[in-house]
Amino acid sequence: MVDARSVRPHIDALIEDAVRAAVAAGELPDVAAPGATVERPKDSTNGDFASTLAMRLGRAAMRPAPEIAAVIARHVASDPAVDPPTISGAFINFRLSDRFVQSEVERCIAEGAAFADITVGAGKRAQVEFVSANPTGPLHVGNGRGAAIGDALASALQAAGYAVEREYYVNDAGTQTDTFGETLYARYQQLFGREAPVPADGYPGQYMAGLAEEIKQEAGDRFLRDEGEPCPPALAQLGIELMVRHIRRTLDAFGVHYDRWFSERSLYEGESGFDTVMGLLREKGYLAEREGATWFTSSDLGEGKDNVVIRSDGRPTYYASDIAYHYDKFIRRGFDLVIDVWGADHHGHVSRVKTATGAVGGDGDALHILLYQLVTLKRGSEVVKLSKRSGEIITLDELIEEVGRDAARFFFLLRSPGSQMDFDLDLAVKQSSENPVFYVQYAHARLASILDRAKEQGLTPDGGDVALLTQPHELALIREMMRLPEIIETVANTFEPQHLPHYAMALATAFHTFNDAFKQQDDSSLKVITDNAELSRARLRLVLAAKIALARVLDVMGVDAPERM
Image (cartoon, rainbow, N blue to C red; front, top):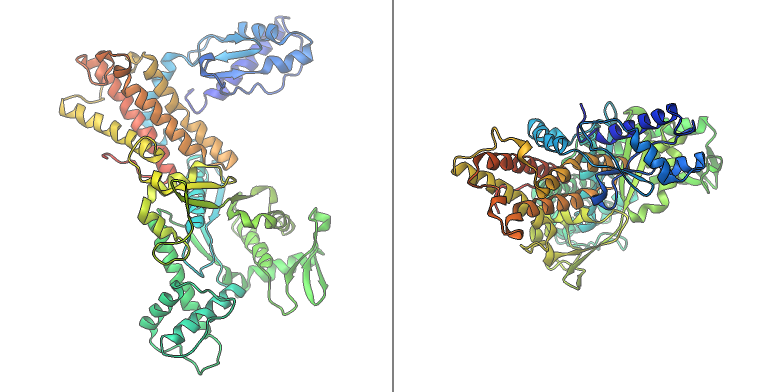
């Protein structure tokens, strides 16, 4: 059965059948036709879909493309889902039939939130690893952008049929962890009256003093050592655990929940992935000893230069950890698709991680590293650089407190990850149509209030005849609803979650146009609830379907769909 999820390939098939029929009738030469994929036209007045196949066939058949388009259109079989095709130049245009469009209201109501789900990822396992900030400090605003992107992308992949796991990689090994421990120990000693300076390369933030206070309250003086002795490993580990606990609370408040928190230290424990991976690389001839260090030599794999994996003092590099970690993802856990959401400062690391993943047996082409740019906070035109509370970085907790989780997530998703973004704090809290998240959420609340008001008047969507939905603004709203499966597919294929909020705004606009049509045309018969009970029930059915669709895209973004505002 054809529905919004399958109508595009259905039209493709109609065109391919038409070409074969035209060839059989001798009206077209028997030339190999490239794919007949249809696309959404820029100008929707021409139809819902358009094909440029005639242009490609014209070159092969040495005939004018408009002439070929007309021949193909004549041979398109009659179909209940689409009206007869029209021609504009070399374009073959298809408009979905009113009856088919109307039927999508019933499908949406019958299937509920699943009406937009697709199957491109069916049977495949995907892992999305995002945020993964070092547990050496609180999450900042930039981490929040990565969290919104990764979580929305994971939700879109789930809607596309993938079995998805969200993962946070805890960097609890290496030099930064050592520096964190020494800083924390200095702060801890200061609480007992000792003169213990923070290391020159340490973490100067006041949050470290607060963390030391937490440790003192929990452990008393148990971690004190003789003056001059290094940080006790147990104190550093407890500090990491407390910091991860803080990060978890922040992400919980942001609506982000992980399936797994993966410890970097686990790569080096027991029969670790690190030992296995180094042995594998050595066996394949990709390791070389040079200058007292161990290097990954990958020039024959297309990588421009060799990279150190084990330092001369025997400590592994971050690159070594990443190789072992991606071996674990692809080989040990067997993910079909792996997406890493990283800050743009990791740009130089992308190619070498993909190369190394292939070297250890993983699929480098199935590893997608999504880089996101910095966030600039503004109040109107004024740039906000420092926290009003601490005079230091602005934390994600502070942003959530000021603008709310929904506005933060929605705004973070508005721009493509690769674009730098300005986040207007004043706009994010404005209760007007200028604020995109308010505009969309208000649309959902209006949809809910219409259904509530109708119920008070004894009207429900039950039994409404969708065939009565013939007004242009009614059909336009349904058509916009029908685009949601395409949006899900686009996000799942391109890893560009910015399509979600832009679609949500387009759907909200279609609803506002539908709901306010009676004002624009000064015709009370266009109201949703009118004296005509049958027509009212049909329109209420559309309202219910639109509410389902809008709630669905908000849910994929991790944004609430309020019933009242």
